[in-house]
Image (cartoon, rainbow, N blue to C red; front, top):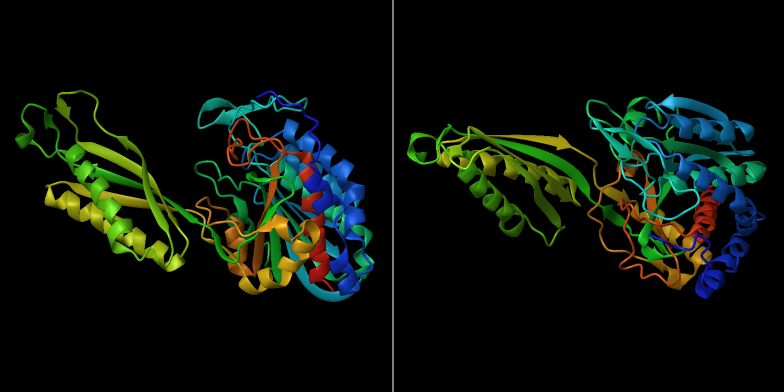
Length: 436
């Protein structure tokens, strides 16, 4: 994908973001000019982002990334803890006055994707993934998340004496999922005591997306992103020659009936007016010859929901459907469900409190309520522990249709860096406002 690297910010971005008024700060009586702080750190944020983009690392292998973050946070004089959940980095900023602890989170890992974007700092990195040599790329924008939070930390250190409370900076590995046989991500950070000594009263996070124009913010109260569970159904029959199926039990036909039966879980058994849900099969593996009916077939797929009770119900229905259909055909079915990320839920009260803050930064027209997202995020684990707010930041530049732009996880995923300062300002202002 050939694109000029230097993309000029469109007029509405300049008017709505860079030159937006500071009315909220004036109304709140703040003496902290968050906009100017953020503009001041913008060149460094872009430099950090380019360095991280050029040196991506896979989940639980973010060793260089962790070192870069740690060195920066220590240079700011922060209390730093490294090595949590393998490569995670956590720092605490103590405000000048007593008050609550809040947390800000950024994820760190890249993806096994070979970059196809024509940039002077494009990734050439490679690594081994599931036994194969692969390219590695920040195809989901985690490099921008890290750089933004590094900038926010620098901003807040400069005004720490005016903060009524403390800030926890969380740089988290393995959001894309730990390697097979390993633990990782937000769940492991919590397991290793991230909130053990002192739980934050609220937590904030962001995610860049190509599905919105540069500088636009998407924020939704309540369920925002789906839970994710993967499943494997092993259907066992009895091998026989294809010309004499009555001498065996055909797991392929049983699997076909199971696939069809599972579709009725969503269409006929759960109340989709309460919350949407998805069950999809991603692979069917069984057999090797045209005239041999095999002993076994494996089906794998995913479950996505926006309600924890519905999530549990669908899992039970999936296993029961597979078991009963297989039995009706003389076969057996064993269902294994690998529990993934919970539903990402934005605290309704916290969203109501902070929505005016974000609107003041980007303007009412640039703050939208996106639809439900069936993708999953392990920020959800933090939001189960304390009220959370997770928002999206558009990074598709003017002149490119955000509806057709290369999506997150694509080898052609592209970030307009003029959006980064908006992310820095947003997270900084959310922290400042929370600690008034």
